[in-house]
Image 1 (cartoon, rainbow, N blue to C red):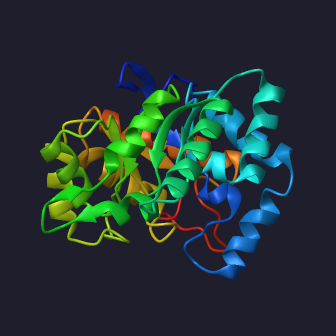
Image 2 (cartoon, rainbow, N blue to C red):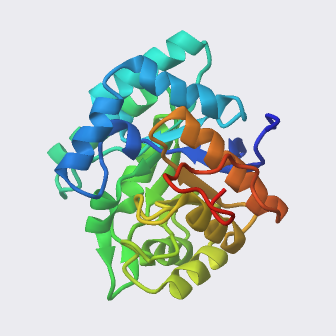
Length: 283
């Protein structure tokens, strides 16, 4: 399998790979249970294990990574060590946890986090869904006080965005012309954690005014990469992205090949799976 540069898109003038490096399967957020969380953390107990994954992504020029780096120092320290070892600066898509209370102290606290996001070298600052959803007013179709936070993000020299687990956030952002350059949205063939039907969410994605960074393409491991990635690539727009986590470097190479194949409308060139009883249909 030859190594090729993965297709890219542009967000707010920044070139990004259409595949983004996810971190749930590096930092131990499995969406399955405690045992799965522990397994992931054990697999990535060393910087070298995570370096193998990031290094595999970099072979395809997939150089952007998403995670709550500024509010999880342990996560950031590992990524910083990887950057130091590889000599390559990743494009950091930070998803910080902010205090959204409506008072001066909380806003000061949020501003401190956002400034820290800039200090660690983030390019994008996408307010975590658990935070921006606190601003949603469904009756008025608004995100009240959002400008306070996007203003802080701009002042820190970062590109603002929102994590939109709630699909309405994309609609309300576009309707009101908020200063948001991209949005995170859950999208997968199972409708896992998507709040409304797949058909409704894909319509929202296609009508979005800015590029969308989709997450959980394999429903947190509930479908195979071939099924999840093929579905997503065939549904999304050419400007949109998929955020993909992997447990090891072998998954990176397999899943990138599946993605290339989906975009090129061909069968992926993969090694056969193991089986105690291989037959003509199991290759």
